[in-house]
Length: 112
Image (tube, rainbow, N blue to C red; front, side, top):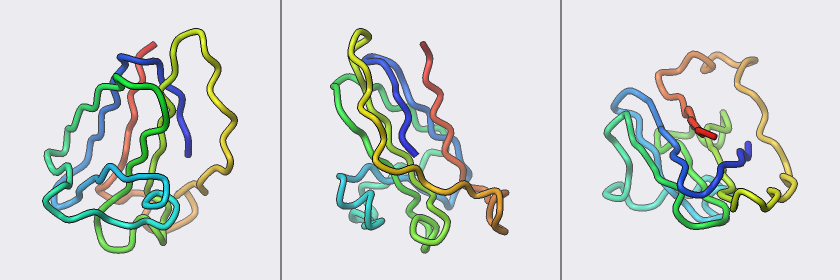
């Protein structure tokens, strides 16, 4: 799923440990490739400031949640006057599987 957010906005990731979130590049996002575990966000209330324009990608670092349940998020940080590019594909929703109420959830709170 791709969300649009203005520069200098924030994204907040809320989840319960032992869940974790990784910032990844486009390849890591597409194929759910996890970086080394020491690069994980693990606080459960991580705040990311969108200070540079472009796509920011995040995935769930627990087991196969990213691959099996599409627990991943892309944010396109744009200048206020620039339109966001159209998404190439949207991730399926989790409402139809048993993990939709998983302790891990990504909530991007984009304040406009």
